[in-house]
View 1 (tube, helix red, strand yellow):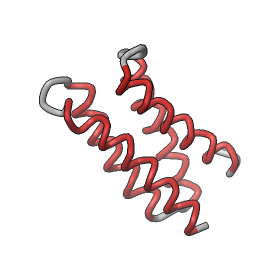
View 2 (tube, rainbow, N blue to C red):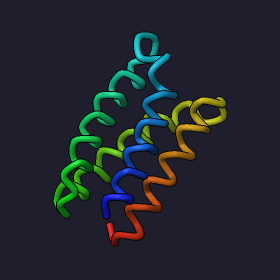
View 3 (cartoon, rainbow, N blue to C red):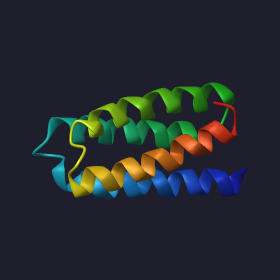
View 4 (cartoon, rainbow, N blue to C red):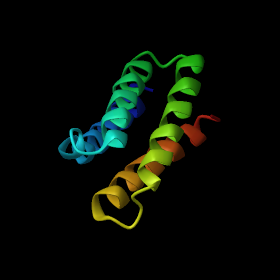
Length: 93
């Protein structure tokens, strides 16, 4: 499980890195970075309840990023989000 946690944390970090340059220009980026920080905390303590909460927060981030679909950074972030969702799906979430 810890390797999966590490992989999830890497994917979260990748999305954060993509959104960080837009933090002060785009409110959705700022809000998403807050949610990603919360997701990181939840994933670091991977109880079933925490993972369910992290998936819900991830869906919120995905919805925000989808507003910018078609732009390179958004597409890259969506790719990492899709990876996280697939990982969650593998655990039955």
